[in-house]
Length: 190
Image (tube, rainbow, N blue to C red; front, side, top):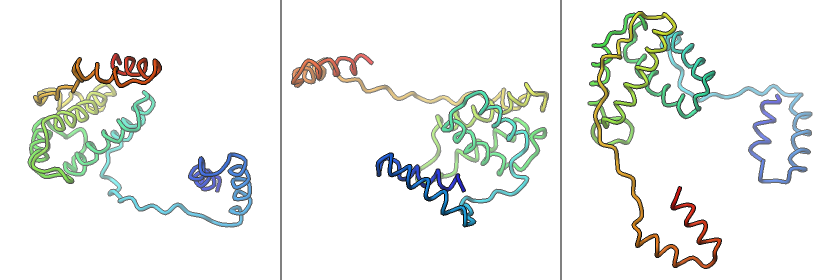
């Protein structure tokens, strides 16, 4: 029950005073003790054997290494689709299978994207797959990384837009105080 109470009070945080939040939390903790509350999941269920145990271990080790939740979500997005498509034991995955998967993925429309997938996205996917198999080699799950020989996808990095010196001078001239001018200078330098 305390998980429910904690989640509920977290939603109220910032909407009511801290003192009121504490009172609501305490009263709710007492009240819900008489109830059975279950978390309702609306997530899609994956087949039981769809995600290999090796990948589950890899994710645990990635968490222990301190990878961010956003990075782990990206890895999962790539790897779960990869495993669902191949439906092959990790030890039996070959370089050709990975190449065919990436080619197939590149030719399909995904989400709201128009056209095919960018080379940058494909290279990120290749990197995720490669990282997993490097971990598998390091942990003696497979003898060699089938993704190692797949070359990186070439893509053009987008140039960073930088304001011109004239635009910077206009910003400085528009400052009404030394504090504003200092903030503009710090932001420009960083």
